[in-house]
Image (cartoon, rainbow, N blue to C red; front, side):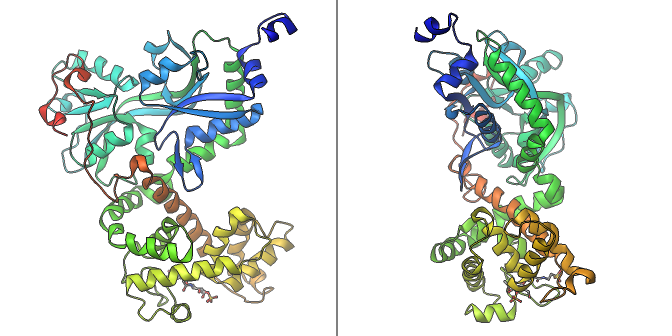
Length: 471
Ligand code: BLG
């Protein structure tokens, strides 16, 4: 009323958001959208929406929906969220209720199968298989359409699971096939060693944000401006690379190997990582990531240079850390933890807090002396020696005579710590995500998943395979 009388006309959605200082958003709690990690709230959608809220200069209020129906229904309700950011594919059936923004990511829908089985290559190979998709998703529509051409096809939908659960169910052979978005496959390939893409059902599904259809266009226009900027500034590319780029970085074989080792090797050492981490006040997942980079969690690993063990300690460093037998995984992990904690404490105060960990890792690999040389060269270049992004561009110079001849400690394979840190960051991210409560069952403590909502009526008129209901 006050706003009405002060300016004559009702405020637009955007003005109201700015006046209230709050952007109320609804999303889903899943690894590809929004979840908690070591630093607090995170996720692709979360990070993108946070940038948007920052640009608007307002606070972000996040709410999560249990399923897609709930998400769409709550949009635009009084005091409810004004915006849905949840990896949504524009679904024509939803157009009555919501309006979609421009797209920020192009994905495709893919059938996922278990590598032990023969790969289904086309729709007719799906007959007789148990297929599961999320209720209310574009995949449900696609399956409905597909059934018109292949009437023998059976499928079920559930509103009790997330896409990551569907992938886990394939991995554990609880179902034959899942239909999910390619970005979810890209993110989760590193957790599930047995999942493979059977074929793409439909390419070019644009992911968008959604607002209530009754809302005015002020918010939508602002969103579209923001997304266009995010494309130009490289923000979208960075987020896409961080969340969906594992296979690009690790390679297909590397991503699969990681998933396998996560299931087969890490459980043997998890307790040692946790206890060493506790003792030395570091994150156990960081230690585990280091261990993976060093030895793929193999206690007998030996490098060409004679460095040995799960955490790859040199003889000198092992002795300094009180490690008697480098091949004993417990001792190796203890030694590595003690060493990284020591390096953290030895770093100059001037290094940015968020970057300290990357500097410490670089020192773990190349030694503090060489790292110090690289920081000096960084300063001489007019860059910031306290910033990892700057120092990492200079480190490789330690291998070139024109540069190392000017340093105190001389030659070093300066590219190695850069790769070392890059890889560990990636493994650390993955491990942090894997050990989230909502996907905790994923690999480390793998267990079968209970889906109470997977009842026959969820499948619409489709007969549901009894095996699907057994779990
Ligand atoms: C590290 C040591 C550092 C040492 C540097 O070498 O080993 N780290 C550990 O032992 C944990 O202590 O710094 S120094 O003490 O200040 O000299 C430099 O000597 C180990 C590195 C070396 C590297 N892996 C841990 O990251 C390694 O094995 N490289 C060889 C790779 S290859 O097999 O030749 O390809």
